[in-house]
Image (cartoon, rainbow, N blue to C red; front, side, top):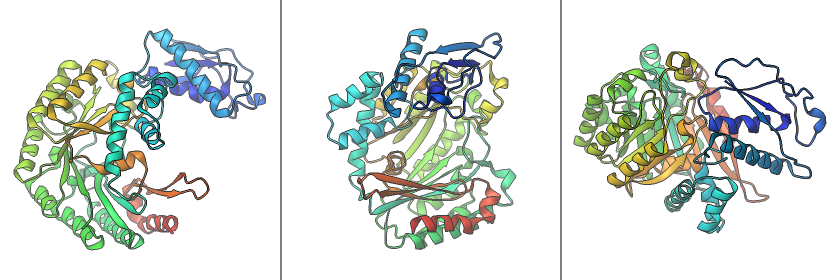
Length: 484
């Protein structure tokens, strides 16, 4: 446990964010009561109690933080000055900085993207990342490389007049130990899957009416694992999609097959017959011991067989996901995964750094796994970059999450022409994405007429499967209201 004792409660949330960046696997709490209404511009709201009131136990750490003088600064500048000061304090304390410096946002490439669009030079962008936010030069260059690729791909679209469609299938063969998504074990819900498909088809039908006359650019089936549906159910959903939407100009149709234990010849044939050109077969790791530990109910051979079957059926745009920082995995285990994937030669590779979310079982029951190592180092990340070069795949999208192993990032690599444009659109938030299914989140992108900036309106579907089925008309009306 890490306790924070800060002399200005207005900066408490900033302090927690920076401290967690340095110590992503440790709980962070206040060392004394803090005010819930602190405001940097209103000293009267500060908590006058400055003494530590908690009792430190063995292994606990206390971090004393002194806020800088922010007299005369705007609220935003005051918070930025505080984050810089605390970052430098922890950098000196630990003897090292962080790959992304004091940047805490999840979309660093979006910053580079916007700066390029604004006409900033590469040197100016690098200075912004490395001098103002203390990122490494390598990460600054990665953000620029990804942003340039994103701009080149997005420029092919009329993002303002088009839209994308997300279709969520919230079922999986089993729930992985690290998973925090709105996913449900198929066997526990198998008596309601057909009703879910009925509700989903109803939502798809009504959304098509709302978007009539607009151009659909990309379609993405995610989850969960869409291929937990039966061949007949997959066929029903894809047939309805074709009936309701004009797919003639759609640039890509992606289905996350994901789990190899959900893949059969019959399901892949359904996808192929409906002209799905991009799928994912995600191992996460090629080490059987880790697969067993994290709750993946399949073998390494199952991954290889599913991939072979997909290629035999003509799929030539297959993504494979892997995760760095899985429990018990170090350089040797990661090398084995990379070597195995390299031999399979996928057209795209997505490298994730494990992010422990509050709702994941690995976090909820972490006492059970406290003796396991969670390693992710710069040398391990470099191994994945070398593997990407060997495969001939290039970085094209990137994002970060809180509590990531090693404070690194997630990077999608692909061969030229095999990129997933939807992945870019969901990260850069430059196009409206209509989302159907339990837990799906619609983002409506519009333009502020006053300053021409982007406005994003979110419309959330309920996460619970039963609630989604029972309240489907309400979910539809939420979209209709906002789109109107």
